[in-house]
Length: 40
Image (cartoon, rainbow, N blue to C red; front, side):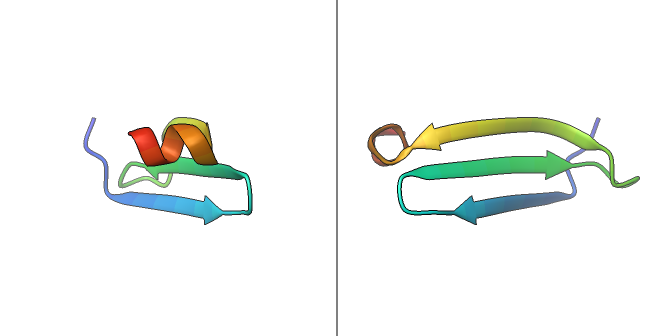
């Protein structure tokens, strides 16, 4: 499965990242706290 688009929702303490394929179906979703985001 090929990822076409990645979206990032930037909030104050929680970031949500998701990726979709060419059909617009969500391939994966992840949530990160600010501390984990900076370490990644």
